[in-house]
Amino acid sequence: QVQLVESGGGLVQAGESLRLSCATTGRILSSTYTVGWFRQAPGNEREFVAAINWSFGGTSYADSVKGRFTISRDLAKNTMSLQMNSLKPEDTAVYYCAAGRTVFTTRRSDDGYWGRGTQVTVSP
Image 1 (spheres, rainbow, N blue to C red):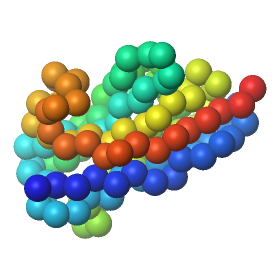
Image 2 (spheres, rainbow, N blue to C red):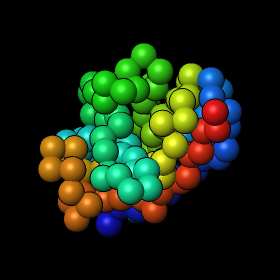
Image 3 (cartoon, rainbow, N blue to C red):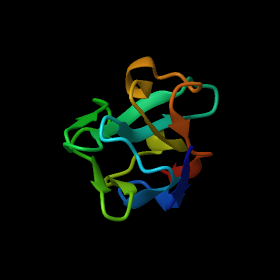
C-alpha cells in the first residue's frame, strides 16, 4: 500500500504564492506511476491540476494553471511538490495528491492512491 499525505495549504491573498507538498510512505512508488494533483472547489467536480511521471519527470498541466504552477518530485525523498505562484481567487479549492498508473487518465477517486486533501484559500 501507498499512503499520501499533503501539506502546505493555507490562506493567501491574490497574487501571492504557496507550495504544496505530498509525502509518500509505505510501498515505494512504481517507476510506471504518474503522480500529481487534483482540486475540488465547493459545488464543483474534482478537476485535474498537474501531473509528473515519477520515473522520467515528464509533466502536464491544466490550461488554467500553465505558467503559474510548477510540479516537481524528489525521488530520494519520495516527495512531490506543487509550487503555485500568482494565485487567483478561482484557485481556491481542496487540493488532493494522487498517484497511480492510470488515475490521471481515468481521474476516478477509486483508482490509484489519494491523499486526504489540503485546503487552499485565495482572497481577492
